Image 1 (cartoon, helix red, strand yellow):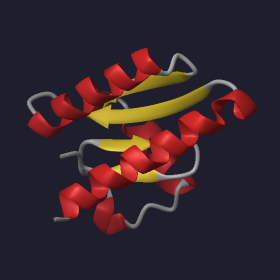
Image 2: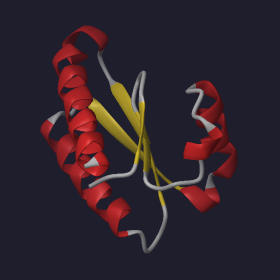
Image 3: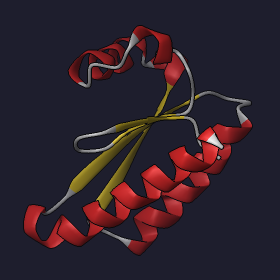
Length: 102
């Protein structure tokens, strides 16, 4: 149930974000993943399709183990609770973050 809510929240945010793109211009989405993570692979595929559909969106993919300092910066800026840190995939949009993908 939680995974479904997370996916719906991501989709809802992306649709709202995409509708606002003509006003705001280019939007970056940061996606942190790990090799061998099946949810990461699904998330990557979803975001790549989204990027094709909405050229104003740029997906910036980061392998978590190679970008520890960067993800820590995102955790701090987005005030991610420590209990939610360290999980993949994690996605950061303009004003929200999402842990997991289903």
